[in-house]
Image (cartoon, rainbow, N blue to C red; front, top):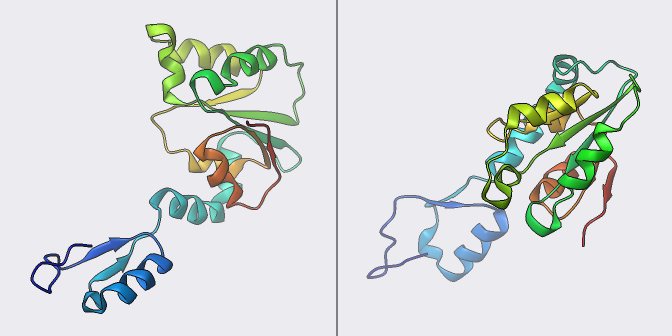
Length: 171
């Protein structure tokens, strides 16, 4: 946090945690009253959205007896997208089991060829798989899930905030 001639040039400084504020005040007590806790907007949306879990489940067609499994994958060499895509396409009709695939936007740009999102979506949708559009807010879909299977991605950390079963298969 910059201090110029003994004063902060800023009226307010955004901090992501109480610990960061405490540490800054120990180092620079003159920042008292200028530090504001803002948190993580995506985590905040997720935690607030979880109060609407049943509405999200209904929106996506999940009944009370249904199980929705989120699938989170990173992109590039660690991506599960190619393997999971075939698995999901071969899926048998199980009406009470739903998969929600959180596609990383970079998976649409493999091998310098732009993939057609609508084609991917329709090929998986006929198997009862929801492919989350990369340009949509993820939290309603995540809140609707009962559990997740995840790899090395920030989505794994966000889902863990919901305190639901999370099967990690990264590394």
